[in-house]
Image 1 (cartoon, rainbow, N blue to C red):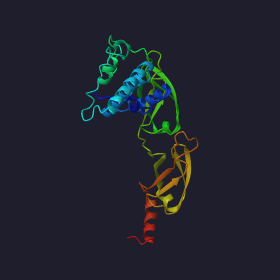
Image 2: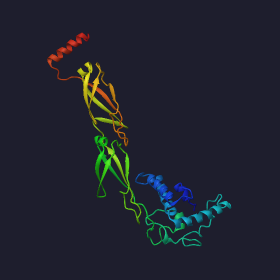
Image 3: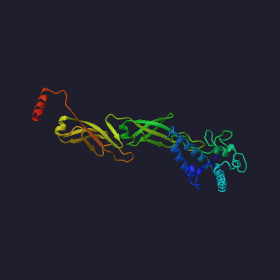
Image 4: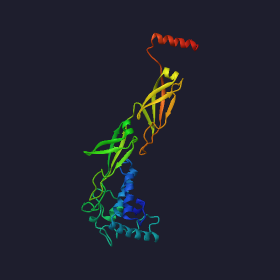
Length: 309
């Protein structure tokens, strides 16, 4: 059975304070939580390892016993033990639950429903002997939810209400959120155990495709129909944007497919008040239809002037 370095699992020094251990654990728990990494076996294993390490190092009595074991195992290695043969030669029994000096009673430790390793089970009595839960406070699980928005709603932001587990929660959306972006509402998840903190609510935004705009980051692209006569002669045209109507000026003989860039008329930059991306206009010249006799005659006259057969 391999020795587990719980300090290494959490990425902290052996002199780390309880607060530093909790902070490191919370960071790893958020990073590798199964709800955030669905169907990811590697992330699930790291989440379990972090839970196990926190179970030991955040409890002063467990940590003291574990440190005693660590010192004994280091002496064993320094004496040449375990080389080429794993850790099979180390006498674990004196540290195992209920055995020898410093043994741990199974009813002292472990949490109902936890998934701990054989190493933990051997040293700390497995799943808690009589099946009682640990009296140590524990954080509640995180909830996940999705919130659907139109592009215009993501542009404007503002208050929204979302229902999670039968509760109506009111939140304020910051302008400029992106499709697939996730925000965290702390203390809105499952209740903690034994006085521990509640979990968080993770909300992922789903923004529906828009019929008029294509979004790339903070920039927008919009198709704008332009009458043939205005494209030929030039002039002003009003364009409807998410931020309201804007007047543009077209040069004479504007070609079909021309692009115009309107700086600062794109999407809001998330959490940067007053900053916007750009709006790109694709000009689509529209041919006239249902010509009158007079219009047809004028076009024929133009064709002759241009020497078009």
